[in-house]
Length: 211
Ligand code: ZN
Image 1: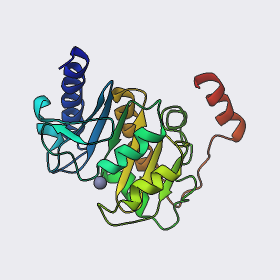
Image 2: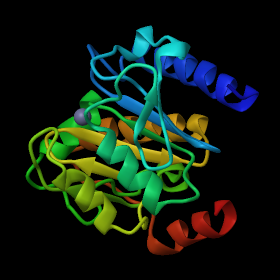
Image 3: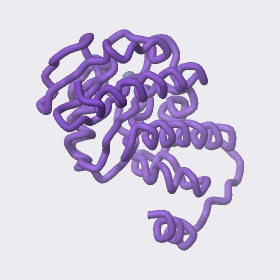
């Protein structure tokens, strides 16, 4: 095992435990993947993110065939679709976190832009988010829908299910998933109230300054 892979496994276990301990994932919900030089690391099926053992994390080859470790999550196709279409993404975080999932259940959530730019931070860390229609867990159409977005979005919300978020590093993907969750909480809390959103010029300025 390369030092790079060893460090990635340790970092994955540390950040997954942090997500679990702060309530972003409960039970065995949620899964995480990281890109390596020679393949991918993916959290195992039916594991609690709080109890991840670095050596048991599933290793997949470049074609996502299972090489070693425990069997990967059944939702691996979400990760595959994003990692294939966003070459700059080094990691994917999928959660069933409460507020983002609540937002994904509301009938008036705009599927084209389901997380309005309420704060500068969600614009900088997450960007525009698509809401993808409900399909049952494990249905490969979910991966096909993410594939169909051609890597244009760094994050999506799966209707009645939860968010899938990418990042340039695992740390960035986790931070973006946290930002998405906190923004979803604000959006649900502010429902029915007249809300002032940053205007187009202010959003453009954020893209220009922060990329
Ligand atoms: Zn899920």
